Image (cartoon, rainbow, N blue to C red; front, side, top):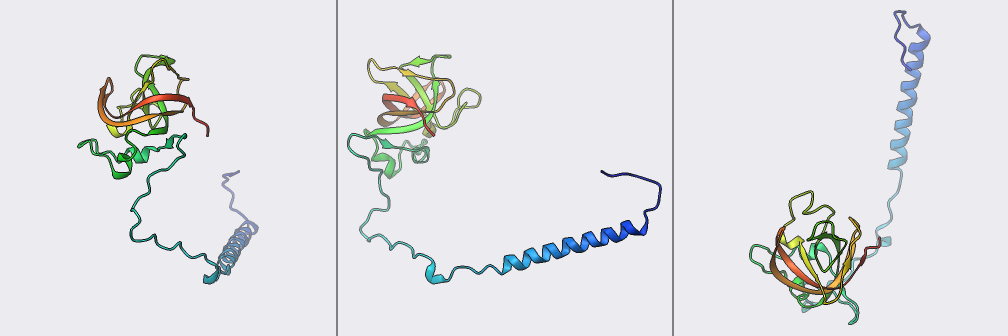
Amino acid sequence: MLYISNRRPDNRSFSMIGVTRKLLFVSAALLVVVTLSIVPEPPEAVPKADPEPPVDAPAYAPPVAPADEPIKVGWHLLASLNYRTGKPGEELAELDGKVVKVPGFAVPLEDWASSVTEFLLVPYVGACIHTPPPPPNQLIYIEMEKDKWAFLNGWNPVWVEGVLKIEMTKSVYGYVGFTITGKRVYPYEY
């Protein structure tokens, strides 16, 4: 606590301030000495980098999954679609027509619907609802397969599995860069 007084402090309090400053200085000096005395590992203990790939290896490696398992696709890969020209990046183009698995947040196209046959998948919560819609390369139109429904649970993230098509579509929220024919929608597990 700080007390304000009109009395002049005695010499004892001035000497305590000096001792405190000296202790702080000595502590800081010791910390610097200890930090500088830490010896780094010798260079031979550091593992060497992997050798470079062969010259004829492709510059990218498309995602690979077992035949019965969908390919996991992230939003960074979907963002490689140039939505002005409609041209996807090389890696993304190879996924056109393949069964994929994408995480995201569902935006029902009907107000407050909890079981739907179509919805938008977006990369972050609240997109299109509380903020302007993201660009088309961050929106996926999901249309469930015949006789299948998606059961949505509020703002919780989901996984969507289905066949990816790279095509511009118009929705109530604007243009969408992708369509997935949904096979399965289930909660995202952290």
